[in-house]
Length: 84
Image (cartoon, rainbow, N blue to C red; front, side, top):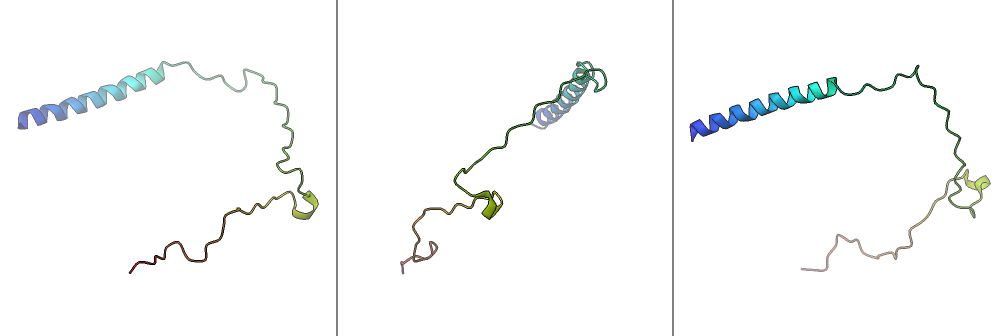
C-alpha cells in the first residue's frame, strides 16, 4: 500500500508540473492583444436616461424612489413560539 501511495504522489506531482508548463507554453504562444495605439475605435453613443417611475416627482425626492413592502404585519416576533 505504501508503494502505491508513493507512486500516486509522484504521479500527481508530475501531472501538476506538466499541466503548469503546458499552460504556460499555451499562453506564451497565444495571439497577442491589439495595442491601443494601432487601432482607432469610434466612441460609443451616450445612453438615454432611464425613468424607472414616471409618476414620482423628481423635484420632491431628487429622483429617489422609496417603495415599502406590502406584507401583513405580525403582532408577535417570528422567533417566539407558543410551545412549552
